[in-house]
Each structure stands twice: as C-alpha cells, then as structure tokens.
Length: 201
Image 1 (tube, rainbow, N blue to C red):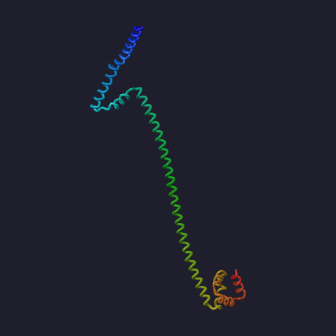
Image 2: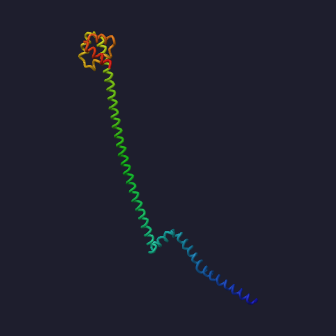
C-alpha cells in the first residue's frame, strides 16, 4: 500500500511537471521574446518619431477584405450625409420662401398704413376746412341778421319775401322777437302766414 501511494505521488508530481513544463516552455520561448521584441520596436519607433498607430492604420487599408468594409461604411456615410444635405437645403428653401412671403406682407401692410395715414390727413384737412367754412357762414349769418335788425321793417319785409324759403326761415329764426314781429306786420297776410307756419315747424 505504501508502494502504491508512492507511485501515485510520483505520477501526480510528474504530470504536474509536464503541464508546468509546457507552460514554462511556451512562456520562455514564445511570449517573453514577443513582448521583448514589441517593446524594442516601440522604443525604436518612438526614437524615430514614427506613429505606430497611423502606420498600422495604413497597413490595414491595404488589406483587401478590410478595405471593402471601409468603402461600404464610407459609401453609407456619404449617402446619409447626402440625404441630410438635401433635406437641409429643402428646409432652407422653405424658410427663404416663408421669409419672402413675410417680407412682402410687411411691405403691403406698410403701404396700407401709409395710405390710411394719407387719407386721415386728407380727412383732417377737410374737417378743418368745413369748420372754418361753418364759422365763416355763422359770421356771415350774424352779419346778415344784424343788418336786417338795423333795417326798417318796411324795407326788410319785401327783401325776405324775394328770398328762398330756406334762407328766409334761417334769417327770421335768428331775429329778435320784436324785429320779427314788425317785419311780419309789413308783409302781406299770405306771406306772413306762410313764414309763421314755417317757423313753427
């Protein structure tokens, strides 16, 4: 039994040595030299001022199957960018059309405003003219009334009967009651009755 245990221990220890031995050989003869060579190459590249990553990118471009994928990606990117540019140009054209419409509407509104201001000025000028004409006619009427009041009733009655009814009523309505009574006395009964009925309306 002690023999069997020794044998198993030896087999186990030799099996362990073999697996460790293969790993050690792989580590000593492959990985460490590769790491050392890589470190030496990186140091040489640094001293020579060469960017290793740029060079690696150039070398991968020359590989045909990688280049096809890159060309496809570039074509897809260009297509997406082209579509985006077209949509942005269409949007710019729409915005320019809206801006042109707004500008024309603004110009039209400004013209309308200017026209309305001009009409307002014309109407204000016309109102001023009418006010001055009304004031003038009121002054004229006052002068005519005062003239008739200073005239004798015998002279004023025939003049009033020769006027139109509207003018005669306008003057008679502004006369003082005493003057009006004396002028109506000097008129014919028909004319006096006509003017009296017109004055009462």
